[in-house]
Image 1 (tube, rainbow over the protein chains, first blue to last red):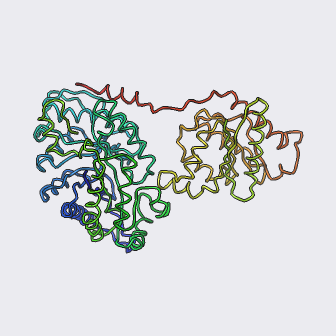
Image 2 (cartoon, each protein chain N blue to C red):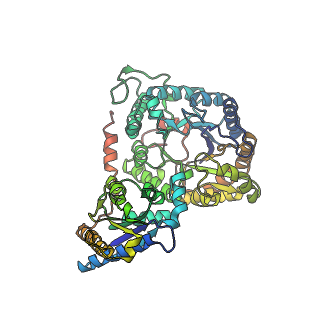
Length: 365
Length: 204
């Protein structure tokens, strides 16, 4: 199982002192956070992609390429790559290039994006979001799997005798997760292709997460990729920790109350009860995270949101010390207990290359 | 058969709730005349006001609100009653229907009603409530019931029936619609269409 963090890259005033980091400072902070993730033993760093303020990460492969050069083990991913408004040809090229530079430590999570104006800014129509996600991904897959592509679709100019370069490293495309919160169409898409499904459950009750993951697992088996428990599942999470749980609540409350997504709504107490948000001691975070397995079954990737809502870099780095030093080692041990040997590991480039070379009948996600 | 009455009254006791109860009783009587047994649940939006505001902010319902939404979308018929605020339904009333899936009430029999201090606002039923439920593709019964304060202490006149007669007429109309409505089958996850749409994109 893999543990990591994802960032949305928001520039948010610190509600405790009103300080707003400059874009430059925030971008450098994202790099520092990624390097820290590797230092404390986490497996994955994923960045969001946004094309409007107050978010800075419009160019994920630039950021991830820079981080790749400064890390050794960390898997670099996205949360999410906009499959609707990006040209799938450019996605194929950019992420294949990144895959080479990072020696295979790359996968990506596709999402539609829910910011209305981004669609027209990039020449698309939000009402066709699902259709765009389907067609663009169908083309992306072909560009990575076929050396020469002839293609015609609804949403972009046709391609005749097109070869996307560089070809994927070792002839194996980056692993793809399909991220969705509420669209069964996307769970079905992940199942159809036998790809991973990431449910970013951080703002949603467990019941909803259970239904979406169950649908994906059932359809994964329906499409002949294996048993439901062989499907590849990732979940989000959101935590704030201090040794003493009252200290964590006191310190995090102003950030929660003013957070861009859920602030000025429910109380911290109600929100922690109804969603995966956990504010407390490392032990509380461990217990809460372990309970996710009861919701979705044994799963492959757990990503935490650690750096949003105006939290200062220093605080985020302290959080990562706790996450990597005290929480994740216990989670690795506990999640391994009772996990059937047949449940697949999280996908890695090395395992996928080995599977591609293996004789028929042996497979890996 | 399940009847749900939604009341957006804010005071306790409230004339909006009183009207909702009277209308529900009238629907029950109308169904009893047809030999149908109905269970009634009243959803008081006042108790859900905070949850409704939070849903607008977070995008998901807290458990109590989720239960209320489930009751409304699962009902065989609805009685919906709002006080008139500033020339329309109350914001709380509208916000509750704002957080319900826009397709969830399609085809559902609805009786619309409102309360107010003066009968001068009674067309709010036709100008505000009826279009709202038409947009949701609900089936709104022809008689909508407006109860002004004075209606609770007077009978009809030469131009209109008194409140009890209007309640009886509207309740009878909703009962008729509910009785004629075929039992609903539980919808299954329809993923076959989604599968076909993906298969159509397959080139290999």
